[in-house]
Image (cartoon, rainbow, N blue to C red; front, side, top):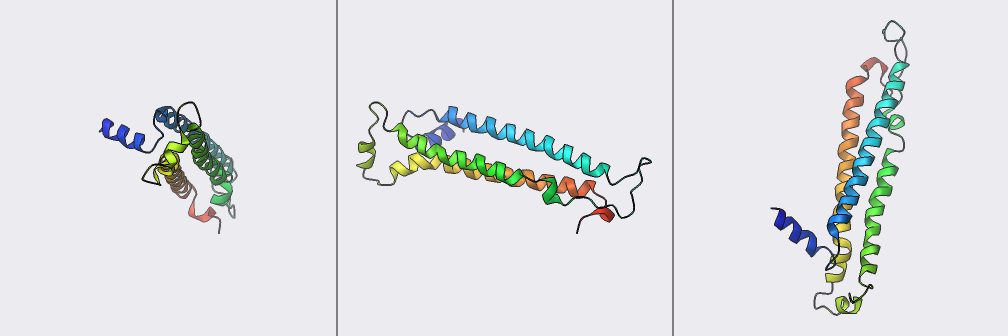
Length: 157
């Protein structure tokens, strides 16, 4: 399985390109983003829920929880920046062909005219889609947590 994965990633990368290091860097960045947003969401939820209850722990009549979009403000743009950074790796991969004996001219003369673009943009596109899916799953988990913790009487319209 690992060998098949390695062959697949190498087919989507320039010859000799350190795809493992690139993928590891994206994985670390995504992990840091998940942790930051998880902590940020938990702190914002705690702060907003605190205003719903009095000192005895009873729900204050008429208290309304902040909308979900306000609790998760800044979440989607941050993931968008990381996804765009993945796509920018295509530029790095394209310039990789200009280093040393790696000839961009050879890649342009290959019989399959899409080989250069597949090796330049293939893996960054896969990473960008995976990051978008991760962001959507995380946002869905946050939404479930929001719906689970906020009392129905205090839901924002």
